[in-house]
Each structure stands twice: as structure tokens, then as C-alpha cells.
Length: 230
Image 1 (cartoon, one colour):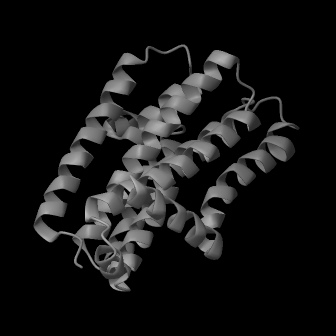
Image 2 (tube, rainbow, N blue to C red):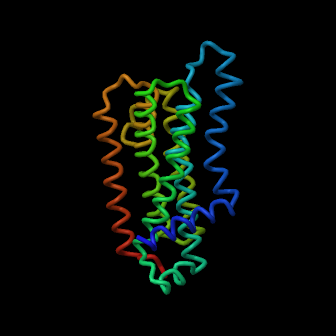
């Protein structure tokens, strides 16, 4: 537990030293706020929470994948893990620590989105719960990419995957064909729930859970095959 806490603190320090990582957790809520005030506020034809839900889905589906993948692959490439192992930190403790930190940071960002939006208390709780599940799925995907490839390859592979997962729900808002075929993505199910809190939660939550299970299995396979490359 002490090792996991140390990794958690280390990642927090690294995040504030690296503006690129920090910006990922600020830019999406900031854009949602500005668009809501300056575009949505002056146009009655635009749903009041459109930009909040749109940017939240992009953040949960895209923003974290490249961040997590880049952070882990950088530590592997720079041999940081070798020193951590010599200090008694197990690879799984490292993964829990860094994944837990990004889950914490992603939850804070999700709360920020909720505060920007015009939601009831029940809607706010549903919104945060769904967002956190999407954040968890993206963390698993980013970690898997980092283990499977070196830093350069992880970034090259992670970016198109992140763009597809993050922006497909946005496009689906305006295209029924894409909306139909995007239903298997966890990011699309997040989009479905946060845009209409009256829909039944069973199907979206089932799809999101299935995504998390599949990503967990892929992570385990990658971990057993590649290890942490230390």
C-alpha cells in the first residue's frame, strides 16, 4: 500500500511538472465552459448542456488514452521502473498507483463538467458515475497500449484510436448511420446517457461494462506477454 501511495504522489508531481499532461485535464472543461457561455448562452436553439456533454464524452474517450499511454511508456523508456523495482515497488503496484491517480484526476475533471452543466442532483450523480466508468476504460486502454509498444509506437497507435473513440460520439450526434454503428463503443454509450438522462441505463451500462471487461482482458494478455519491459 505504501508503494502504491508513493507512485500516486510521484505521478501527481510529474503531472504538475508536465504542462502537456496538465492541460489535458483543463482544456476540455474550459472549452465546454466557454462554448456554453458564448455560444450556447446566446442561441436558444442549442440545448443548454450540448457543449458540456459533447466535450465530456471527448475527454473520457480521447483525452486520457494518450496521457496514460505516454506516461507509462515514458517511465518504461527512461528506466524509471528499474529504480522503482530496486526500491521494492512491484510492477502491479506501479500500475495501480498510476492508474489510480489518473482515475482520481479524471473524476475531478468529471465533477468540473458537472458543475458547468445545468443538471439536477440526480442527473449530476448519474453524469459523474458514467464519466468515471469511461475514464476507467480509457485508462485501461492507454495502459495496454503502453505495455504493448515503445513510447513512439504507443503514441503513434494511441492517437488514431483515441480520436476514433473520442470524436465518434460527437459525429454520431449529427449522423444516424454512425450513431447506429458506434453503439459498441463505451464513449458512445456515455454520450447516450449524458444527453438524455431519461433513457434506461441498463443497455448503456452493460455495453460500458463489457468494454471494461474486454479492455481488462487485453491488458492482462499484454502484461503477461510483454511485462513492464524493465
